[in-house]
Length: 231
Image 1: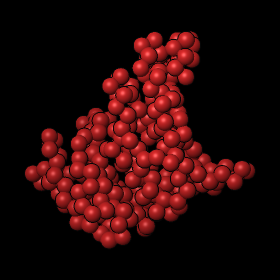
Image 2: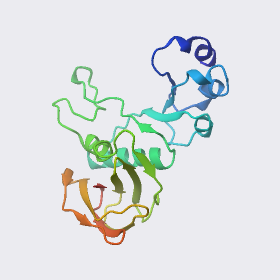
Image 3: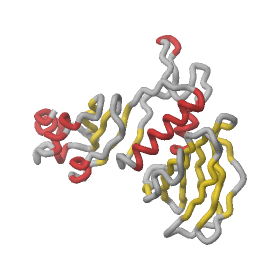
Image 4: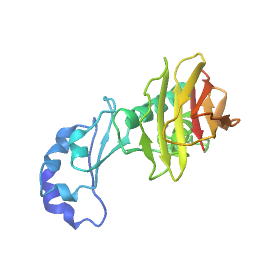
């Protein structure tokens, strides 16, 4: 791959994404990243996370390259599958510090008995699709992730984002019991946030606005839920 990128990638008219190894095996991309002739021709570093967990890639970051997770096949269904997708996105952002999480297949394909899409064969959004939407509908291109406490309470995982004068917090409760979770915001003046929630009984449902007082609020996160707070 290093040889090809160094000698041939200059002919491309669009950014090159590489190496897309199955288990984000950095031995496929490190030689090119460490090659001064190949490095300028790399647009993005991408990989799949089959068999591995999202992890940082310091070599790519130190060379100024974005890192994208571009494929993983998750088979769980229902709310458990939705929570699995949400937790994986959460960890891709906050643990691995990836720049993008890509779901590689959108619509189920009944002719091939293929069912890993976010939308089923009858064009209904699946729970995993709603989990993805808890992020993608609100965290838009160009937004930045801000520091947040990764695991502020038992079974609760949180990431936070900002862009275009909008602020977004995504909180996951993977447990079966509700958690009364306090949130404290720093560096932003926010008076109200609107929650959207996916749970065993709701799909990206808009709920009543939450008042933010002196940069803080507390919210009851239902068991097995994904809640996005946005303004």
